[in-house]
Amino acid sequence: MSLIAARRRRGMDFWPGFVDALSALLMVLVFLLLVFSIGQFVLSDALSGRDKTIDQLNAELSQLAKTLSMEQSDKAAALNRIRELAATLSSTSESRNAFAAQLKTTQGELDTAHGTLEQNEEEMNRLGADLASLQALKVQLESEIAARLAELEENKDKLAVQTELSAKSAAQVELLNRQLAAVRQQLADISEALEIAKSENVSKDVQIENLGKELNLALANRVNQLAKYRSEFFGRLREVLGNREDIQIVGDRFVVPSGLLFPSASDELSTTGEAQLSRLASTLAELSSEIPSDIDWVLRIDGHTDKRPISTARFPSNWELSTARAIAIVKYLVTHGIPADHLSANGFGEFQPLDPNDNEVAYARNRRIEIQLTNR
Image (cartoon, rainbow, N blue to C red; front, side, top):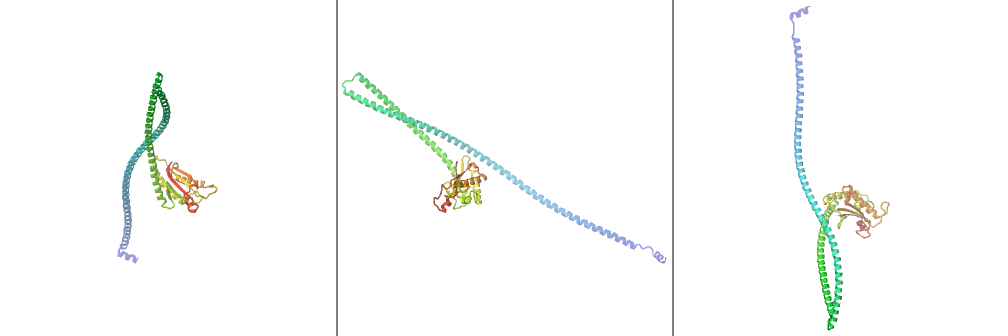
């Protein structure tokens, strides 16, 4: 009771509770500020990351716009190039058509010349036969004239011996003179006909000679055209196969040792042989696109062996081996795009040697493949 009375005497003391309330309120405010600060930091970081993403997207968009502009420029340049190529192709097609028309006209003229030449030859043969007949007739008439002249001279001599001429004898002399004049006229006509026939024959000979020259010139032009492409083909082939001493050009043929393409006594292409033929096929494909279509060219592949005989189940003789090797090359070229109608495979065995000696050097030279670009 005394304690309670003492407290009552001091009055009510609210300060500790107020301090506790203020402390609690301050702690709440500090917590709220901390939460706000953390939220502000998180929000700032998120906004900063978003700004970076936006900047990166803007940079990528700018790069894409630049790329699109370059592609549009490239597309425009490509379209211009396509237009130029189309114009060039049109011009080339027109030139080719014009050349084809000219070639067709030349071929027609050549055919006409052939026909005219044949007709002229027939006419010349006919004129020759007529000339022979006329010459035989001339000889016959000359013999008859000589006989008549001899008879006339004999009659004149007889009449000269006689002192008087009878009317009958005079008539006979007159008749003989007329016959002689007629025979002489016939002889003159025949001679004139012979001269005309000779002049016609000379004219026909000149025409035939001119036609022959034109025909030979046209054929020579065709041969020269193919010879030009053959020379270019051999030059390119020499480049792609390398400057090897064992590869030679003999006349119009390209000579390759068989050992470069095939193993001994086999028609199976070696790895090296396939590589060489691949280069050959590429070169031939490029050149064939340049050869005019009116040149009927063919690539001959000729197989040759040495003189030593072979006798196996697959190759009973060198004929079969050389032919099989040529066929293997042709088949390889066909599989690499060379038209089969422009290829020819031939086997000659040991019967066309380059070196007739009996030694290893001669055998190596004779084992070969010959490539020839020629007319069909």
